[in-house]
Length: 317
Image (cartoon, rainbow, N blue to C red; front, side, top):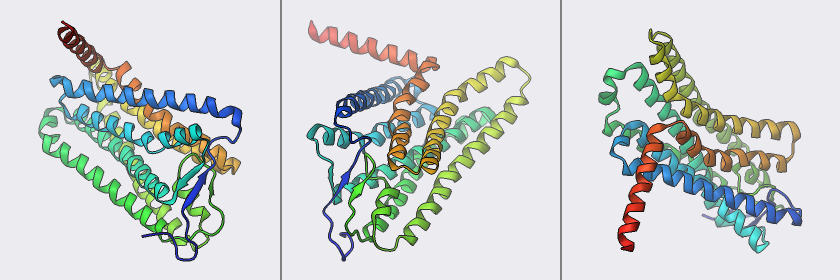
């Protein structure tokens, strides 16, 4: 299905984070570095979990899925941005914009729902430790991840199909470094009332709902920890949640920061700068947050590098 019948549109212009020519090399180098660190860091988490049988548990199964999403999430926006800077072109085709929007919404929502599932996993582990392996069975873990994908795909499909119904007149410039849903809808010259209603409804349902689930899980976790008699048990239980809680705080904090920034300044460019936090920086920091305080991940990574070094030595001989 193409764009509205009133005006055929073939492309949009992405204005990026800055239109200053002297800043483009700096932006290119910065984003390339962050993207490579993101991909490498999350890939190492996936390799560590998959190569170590001791990490074949529900918590690390969900973590490896989160790492996969954190590779895909910035991959929907950063490579295209780097290409545009390198070629000095701001153009993105209509089909390319719709495709980018679809996958951006998909992986953003997947990130949010996976964090909620991980909060539930910590709740079961701390509040029901004796029944943990029975409740968090491989079948349930696989089913939870499948539900995450189905919900994210349906939401993304709904949002992009509604954008396809819009007509665009003369203004094709997007003051952002990617095709952000709200920015694209604002460019339409046809009625966007239904789009805005669905957009805000989905934000509350699939953004606020998971946040409420996370908060409820941690409320129950704090209650369970408070009821423990051993100080060592309290510390051990809480320490398993610190990494996840840090990631949740960082993700939701940066999203809230973006909306507050856009609401206060009313500037699309400042909104684009703020969105860098949750689209690029958060996925880059997640591997460091999960590995720096996690002895199991550190041990698995050391074992993985040792195996890789041994195999490399054998091949060279």
